[in-house]
Length: 342
Figure 1 (cartoon, rainbow, N blue to C red):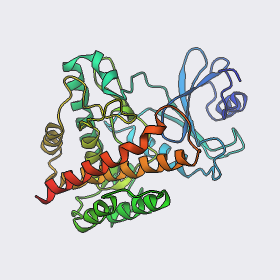
Figure 2 (figure 1 turned 135 degrees about the horizontal axis):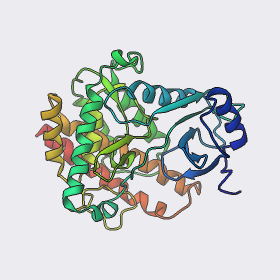
Figure 3 (figure 1 turned 135 degrees about the vertical axis):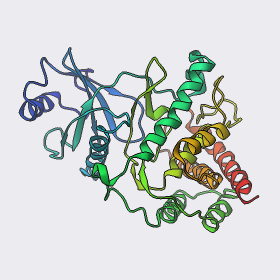
Figure 4 (figure 1 turned 90 degrees about the vertical axis):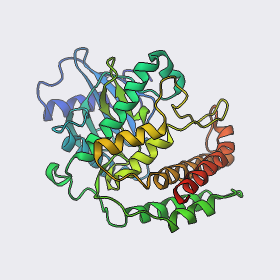
C-alpha cells in the first residue's frame, strides 16, 4: 500500500467529507503518511501540497471503535485552544464511522520535534536542553491554571476520589497481567493506599505529560502538547509526579524504556518540583507520593507488555528486556515513597 493511502485512512472519503464540512479548505489531491509513536490511537500527517493537517483515529481492528476517545481528545483541544496552553488548532470532529471506518478528528499540523531520549536531546546542548525541560514545567503550570468551568470542561471528569480510583484501577491492571512473582509490588500498592494525600482543587490534567508528548520548536519553546487520550479532570500533582519520574536517572544500561535525565543540562527533579511550586503556588509537599505512584503505574504498564510478550503477542526489538526493568521501577517507587514517609 503506498504512502498516499496508509492503512485505516481512505483519502477519497476524507476529502469528500472535508469538502462538505469545510468547503475550500483543501486545495489539491491529498496524500498522507502514518506518524509513528503514540500509545494507541493512530495519527496521520495529511497534505494537499500547500497546507498540512493531522488526522487521529482509533487503532485498526479496534473492537469498540467508539467515538468516545476521539470526542474527548477533540473536546479538550477545542476548549484549550483559545487559552495560552499550546495545542493544535482543531479543524473538525467526525463521529460518523462510515466515512473512514471509525470516528476521527482533524487538527492543524504543528512543526516541532518530540524528544524521546537523552540521546536525542544531547545535540541541543546543555543550555537549550535546560530551557526546553524548564519550559515543560512552565507549560504544565499554564495547563493547571486553566479554570475548567470557564472553558466548558467543568464536567470533563469525576475529581472526587480521583486518587483512590486511580490506585484501584492500576491494581486491577496489575492483576490482569500477573503471571510471575514480583517482589515488593503488592507492598508498594498497599503503602500508596495507606498514605493517600489530600488532593488540591481539581484541574484539567493531561495524564501522560512528558517531553515526547510535546513538540518543541527551534527556539526551545513548546509549540503543542499532543496525545490527550488520558486527559480528564483530576489531581494536577499526578501530572507533576509523572514528569518528575521521567526526569529521574534509571541507571539501566541500554534500557528499552528511557528517561531523558541523562542529557547534559537536564534539570534535576528537585529543580523541576521547586519551579512548579513557585509558579503554581501549590503545596507540593506530598510530591514523593505522586512520583512513587508514577513509578508504580509504569511498573504495571511494563509488566503488561512483558506479559503479552511471554504469550507471544508482542514482537519487536527490546520487548525481551522489558521484564527485567519492572523490578527497577518497583524499587524506585518504594524508595521514593520511603522519602515521603521519612
